[in-house]
Length: 109
Length: 116
Image (cartoon, helix red, strand yellow):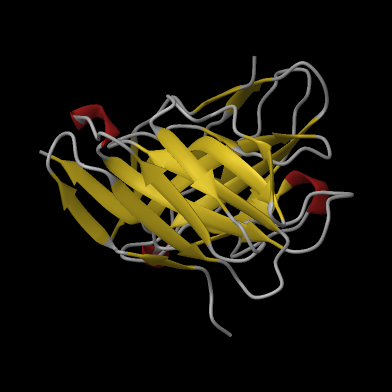
C-alpha cells in the first residue's frame, strides 16, 4: 500500500532557526517524492521534487530509501515560509499523487 | 497565463441534492486529476483523465461520484444524492504532455462543498 506520514500537525519556530519537516513513506517500489506548499489564500503548488535534487527558496530534501524518509529542511527559517506543507509520492512513471496530512509551519518573529 | 480554474468556488447543498463541479485545466494540458480534501487532511486521489479517456477511477468513493471530460478539456465531477460525508474541498489539477517521467501537476483553487 502507498502511504505518506507527516507526524507533526504543527511546527512552530522562530525566525532564523533551522526547520525540519518530517515525512516518511511506504511504497513497494521506487517512488517519486515531492513537497507541495500552500501559502495563505493561495493554491497548492509544487515546492520541490527529489529527482531534481534542487534547492528552492532555501529548502532541500534528501530521499533516504533506507529509512523511507524525505524530510524537508531549511537552515534559517523566514517569516514568509509560514504555510501548510504536504509531502507526496507518486509511483515511478505513475500519475496520481498520494499526500500526507500536511504540516503547518509557523515562523515567529 | 491563466492557471487551472474551478467553479463554483463554494457550493452549499442540501442532503440528497445532486451537484456538478467544473474544472477548466490549463490550455493544452493532457492530464487532468480530481482530488478530495477533507478538513484537516491531505488531498486524496479520486480520478484521472488522459485527454478524454478516464484511465483511473479507483479513488471514487462510491457510484454516486461520476466524472467526465468529453472533449479532452473541461471536466465535470458530479455527485449524486449528496451526503454529509461528501463535504470537502474538491481539487482539480492538470499536467502537460504524456507521461514518460513525472510532470508537475498544477492545481486549481478548489471548490468547497458543504452538505447540510
